[in-house]
Length: 252
Image (cartoon, rainbow, N blue to C red; front, side, top):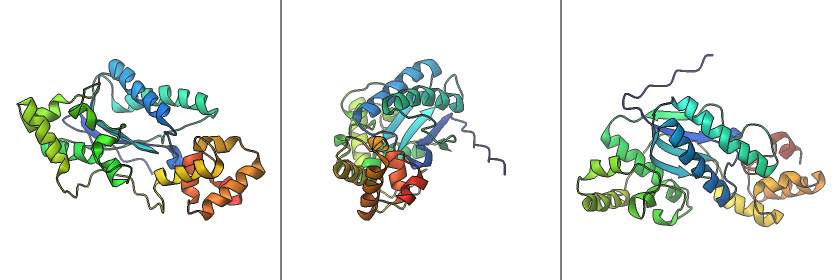
């Protein structure tokens, strides 16, 4: 069946999720996250888009983005080509890293815009990675509170209050509110969070990141895969975190 056409946003603003192919992890360490943020900055200059909020998770990325000179399809091909080339070189792998089709929803009201900003920033808390958003380096919350780098914070803060000091205080208060925000998300029924799982992989296999397991001799690799499954990691989760194919994991 043909794919359903994407809904077009009259404001040009979208909440977008980029996901690793087969739910594979796309950030194994901080160097990967820094490289992706640098790629966002570089492509922003070329494509003219605006980033209003972002959050880098283990195997997916949330972006609140407004189209500029280029269509989002072109934008994400540009971002993907740059980051994936570097990622494949670093981990001595080849092939795709991101799913071909990103997920998106239109954002056309100021109320929903603010809801999405909060939702994106609270992802690490809901995933159990941190208790305070300020402690998570890989989302845009700190750009509003500490120092602006490349996120366009003015639009968000102006919605809250034209006085910048009051706007920042309102922004922090809005994020502290108890809420049941539901926005575009990925369904996932993991028994362990990716953060918990990757720590088990690193500790069990004595490696720095999950990708290294691909380089082990087959008999050693398979022994570790079997042990990790016994520790509660699912086949799909191991596939995401290590990049090893589902068939190899099932045979281990």
